[in-house]
Length: 150
Image 1: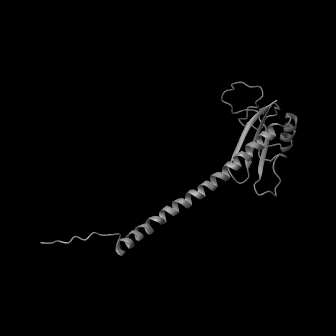
Image 2: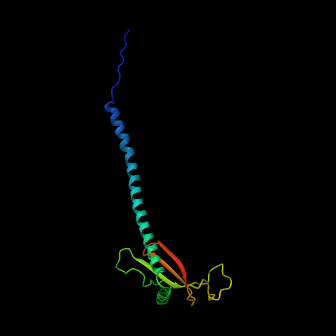
Image 3: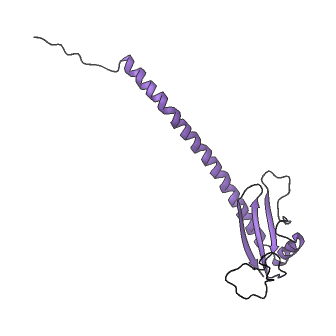
């Protein structure tokens, strides 16, 4: 008895169609994941640039003489008025700089401090020894702040 064995050489048309169908189903989520990754990288780049911009602005403000900062805080007269160190209003990405007198009323580490006025609001005191400075990208929550003393 002579049995002929046929050896398959390559893929059949049906095998190719099934493979292409499986690939077409799998490629859609893969492309969506790639698109999400590209968007995330773009957003991260923008946030990083904004962070470095406000950090640079804060460093430039801190390099100013203390008397200039004190005058800017007294001109603003509160913690919610942007100082003269802020960007002009016509810029696309605007950095606002706030400078205010700070009397440390809510500092839990100071029991009796003669510089506090006792109202539990750190921005209402008349001390000129401590200033609060905050830089923020307008319209975002990206900010940095510090205290500076004479």
